Image (cartoon, rainbow, N blue to C red; front, side, top):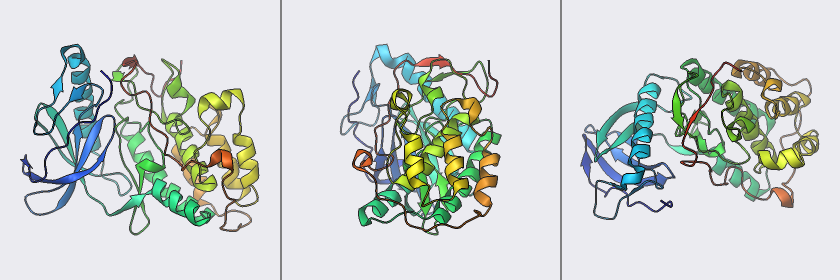
Length: 335
């Protein structure tokens, strides 16, 4: 089944004690709504509704899943439910708070704390539109917080697998929040089957392109480096397949060397190593570098993106999704 537009739940609908206000986001796997609980608190509700497998017409509540897709839909539903249960155990200021999860309308819903702010992708786009660079201090502060949240995720035997500026939310006070664990279905157990994760070219590690490759913290670390490079260059990093043919990343980093400290440039280069063994092996290693003051402070202004880099960081469509479905992916252990 080709991907299709699913009708959102209607405004005003009461579901499991929550009142739907409006749709605020949608993607290949889910629809996200602004809603209010019984006490009037704003929440975000994420509905499992893969557009390649299920169709809901306007006026309907229960999606229609064709029989050939039913088994795959149910596997994804179970993964989504398990993801919600795992994330509900995480209480950390830099990770979205999962408050509840429930079944209704023959699918699953995840209730999250609603936060005011905007995505890092939007922040980068605004800076690029004004011709402004993002300061080294900004990059260090934001990604130090991102690392704090990611360490907690990894400590709970989860991976994010879709870390990018669009999934990093900046609260109104500037503190970062990790969002959208839609790809974080794989608990770190070697023999656990999972749905093939969605990946975003430019931010996805080479590990995600190789069937059966071992995944672990090093996979998220590549994406962390790509997200930092996106902030520094204000553009989407080159995707893995392009890098394997002609790697432009060293040239991008060399051009940024006059605007950011050698320590930060070296850190980003290490995170973006195509060989996972050459990357930092823990988020804590990255956090230590980000926390240390650079030997020589550098200006806050970054160079303008080149024509070849003109697209806004993180704007590429996620690929992969439901194709090549059930793979067995490795975890911390390497073969």
